[in-house]
Image (cartoon, rainbow, N blue to C red; front, side, top):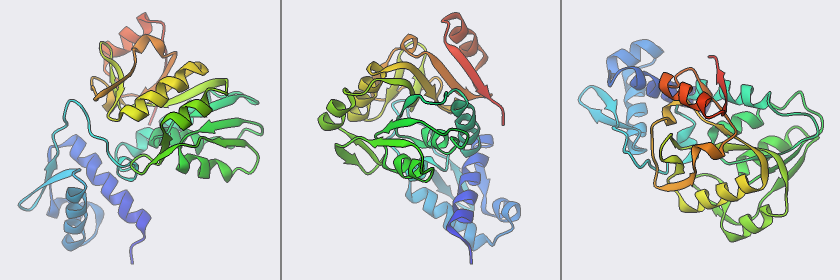
Length: 261
């Protein structure tokens, strides 16, 4: 019997395949993963139900991306670019110093930062993400502060006036900001207005803003503006960053760290 992990990993890899080619077949995927065609059809139907692929006869095709972005549930976001996010999380965690107070935004890449804090003994960590707070509790040695407020089930994050007002009593050394869309001209943006508001408050209460996101987020624009690019101090991304953007960021004196897969 398959475990949930093996099913999730296979579906994540199917999405990875659709990044490389616009169409995949049931037969091709069955051979690749050494599972039955019935299992692959179940995978594709589930991904279709979540609007992550479009089904065609005998397979599936990549869903065209919209310019404004979609507020995808975090459990589904975890299926995308998981190797890149893992590498980015490890590299971003290396930018933390012992005894710092850090702020972790909600998101799948910031969760990877939380998973890579094993070398630290004393950190104070503020977050608005339920799943990140649970991950941090496993270390049993950090001071973890979870913001209250309205809970969004899509992102497992707290937002709204309560979260924002509580956040304003903390001064943090570093903010690790999750990014949905990044555009040199239009700035950093997200599909949700409440997320944008709390992200702006996070930036105002932090000495340094470190944006962590995979290269698929470049040249995108979502519905709600968070900040201009020059308000970000550091970016941690992967090798897929477009060459022209790499040059522009360095001209803007933004620290750029590229994770190797």
